[in-house]
Structure formats: C-alpha cells, structure tokens
Length: 483
Ligand SMILES: Cc1cc2nc3c(=O)[nH]c(=O)nc-3n(C[C@H](O)[C@H](O)[C@H](O)COP(=O)(O)OP(=O)(O)OC[C@H]3O[C@@H](n4cnc5c(N)ncnc54)[C@H](O)[C@@H]3O)c2cc1C
Image (tube, rainbow, N blue to C red):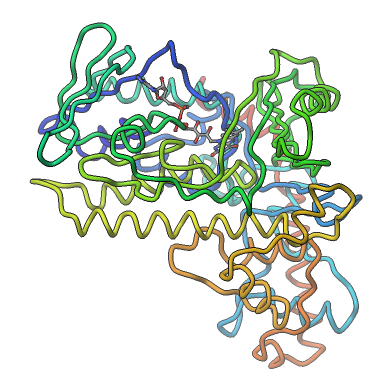
C-alpha cells in the first residue's frame, strides 16, 4: 500500500522508491475485512470496485453482524451508513429515540439502508444509477494476499524497485541516529533518506533500532491470540462480516468469493490455546482449506510512529485487534498524513510531533470504540465476559458512555474515525437504551413524527427491495471487466 501510494503521488522521477520484503519471513497473512475508507484509497490509486472483484476475490461488506455480544441470543448489525436523514441540525437518531422511548418499541435497523440490504443479502446499483458505482456505503472482504499482489504489480509498473531479501543489519548515523542504510542477506545494501517500517509486529526499524516504546492496552483489550483458518464456501456470500462472541473472545466469519475466512480471537488467560483451535475447527461450516494458523499480539501502539527519518505503518506501528477491521484503514490513514507532510528537504521535528499526536489520537479513539463492545454487555456467563463487564475503562470512554446513556448525545473527540451512527449502532446493540433525546426532536408534533419515521422506514424497505442480490452484482462486476 505504501509503495503504491508513494509511486502514485510522488512518482519516481525525483524519488527512488525501493521495497524490501523477505519470502523467508513472510507476511502475517490475515486481514480480510475493511471499512469504507478503503474506497478513498482505491480511488486515489484508480482502483475500481470491478478491479477489486476481479483481482482480489472480493465480496462487498455493508457492516458487521455482532452475535451474542450484548447478551446470549441477541444480534445486531453495525452498518456502514446512517439512520434516516438529519433534520433541524440533529441526526435522525434523536427522532428515533423520541418515538421509540415513548412507544416502548426498538427497531433501529429498519431505518438504515445498509442493514436492510445486508439482512436481505442484497448489494448493488439502483436502476438509473451509474452502473459502476454501488449505491450503498460499503467496504470489501478480500483476499489480502491477492490485494498485495495487485498493488505490487501496480507499483512495479510505476517504477518501484523491489528487493527480495531479509534485512540483516541496520546502519545509523553516529551523530543523529538517523537510519542510513540496510544490509541485505543476499549481500546487497539499500541506502535511503527516508525509511518506512512495514516490517510487521517486530518493528525492525521503529522499535528494534529506534526504541520507540510501546503503549500496552491489553488490560482494556485483553485478547492476545488468534487462530485463523480458511474453509470452503458453502453458501452464497453474505454482504457482511459476522462476529460471534464466544467464551473467551470472539470468532470472525468473512465471506469471500472463493472461500470463507474464519478466526477465533481470544485471550490465552481465559482459554487454552489448543482448546481454542478445536473450538474454531468445530465451528467451520465448510471443509477446512488449511491447518489453523496461530497469531500472537499485544494490543496497543508504538509511542512514536514517526521517529527521525522512519515512519512505521501497519503492524509495525501497533495493533488494536481485528474486531472492527481497522488495521488496513490505519495504514491508509497514516499514509494520507505522511503524504500531507512529506518532507522535501530535511526533517521537521514539529511535523514528526504532529504526525505522532494525530496517529496516537486516532488509535485511542478506535481503542475506546473497541473496548465499548466488551464493556457494554449483559454477559457474565464466563470468566472472560465477567472480566470485561467489570473492568475499568479509559476516562474518555466512561464520559462518552455516561453522556450517551443520559441523553443519546454523541461525543466527537478530535481524530475520530467512527462517527455517531457507528457509536449508536454498537452502544444500543450492546444493550444501552438512552434515557432521553435532543430537545430539537421535540419540535415535531406526534403526528408529524409518526409520518416522518414511517416515510423513512418505507423508503429504506422499498430501496432495499429494488437492489439486486449480492452475488448477482459480483457476477455483474466480473462480466463488466471481461467484456
Ligand atoms: C488475527 C488478525 C486478524 C486481522 N484481521 C484484519 C482485518 O480483518 N482487517 C484489517 O484491516 N486488518 C486486519 N489485521 C491486520 C492486518 O493483517 C495487517 O494490518 C496487514 O496484514 C498489514 O500487515 P503488515 O504489512 O503491517 O505486516 P506483515 O504482514 O507482518 O508484513 C511484514 C513484512 O515485512 C517483511 N519483513 C519483516 N522483517 C523483515 C526483514 N528483517 N527483512 C526483510 N523483510 C522483512 C516481511 O517479509 C513482510 O513482507 C489482522 C491482524 C491479525 C493479527
């Protein structure tokens, strides 16, 4: 992603962009679900939905279904899209709250198009809309290795140079500590002015060389292991990810065109690793296509993601667990900031500070959103869930939860990724019922409110009904490219 972005935006006329990767070390090999901002990244590169379907075995993702999270037997969807339409300077959510709390009903899903389409297995373009542009807020499930291959070809075509060898030694300037060159196992050496550390959890430059330090959040996000395994696809691909809460963590189910991705994310303090693997294998709905693969991680991030002439991206910069599919987005977000402040002639410590402040802020906001999934629950049926329900959480989250619970108000800190509709979906899906709503929602009469909400409900239902089945749209994308 970094090479493709730099090649596209900076070009290789004035810069030499070199990628070093080692097949002996390999990649983490997981990460198949994204959030809608991937479309922005793809658009900058000129990659279309059709390219994604053709090149990466992608399916479309309208959100995540959370099963058994707020309580056993309950499910909700966190959709990519808003509920109803804003009015009077406030979101529809407050009109919904007024009506629901007064009537004693609770059906937010019928006011969100992405949820209605997801539940019906629909995705695509409405009649008379641009056939190349899906009419819904969406992201992708994709084969990450194929996406990487695609971007590799994209980058090489634009002049990026690739070295296939392990880095064996890092050289630094004796005075400044800046990284100056990397020795490769094949005897070569790569010198550089600016280094992007994409070396994964090991953080070869940012940590092992520059000792950035790590902010450990595992007391709030205790999952620290995952088993991942693909299996055969047994049904038409759903246009959403499913996340099911289990005794010591949760399982993901990610539908691709050619297979289904599965994983069990868990905390090894609450379940034995082998037992977790057995559970995952027993849960598969198709024949496994590989042996389960174990991954270990510590949730948190580097204290500095830009240090001297090194910027860390991806797992080298931190990892917050895959619950809301944010890692690939955080790569993309860091790249956008890096491009905005790309140095022309030397390094500015204020830019470094600013980059670190913004990225650490983004990580902290995502952290709070993820913690809310664990903390706001009625579950206490296993030691893991009892721990999560009763753990103390960051003050920033405590305040958000209190404000939301009292009046349904959404707090938006700087560098926020997930906005009001996302917080609303997750907090109410997990079980919170705000006690009140914004006073502007009282401006309508009861009759106006009933009429207005009914209009939105009907519009959502009729629009979802006009969409094609998800699989039909995937086929349509494949045929468009072929023709
Ligand atoms: C269980 C799990 C599930 C995930 N699910 C999602 C998800 O659904 N959505 C999402 O957005 N993200 C997800 N992620 C995160 C996602 O996998 C990563 O963000 C993404 O794969 C990028 O990884 P990376 O490139 O930073 O690191 P890696 O994939 O580890 O790549 C590191 C690279 O550095 C190279 N390298 C390392 N050391 C050396 C060396 N000494 N010499 C030469 N080369 C070297 C390796 O060869 C490799 O190419 C998940 C992560 C985990 C652990």
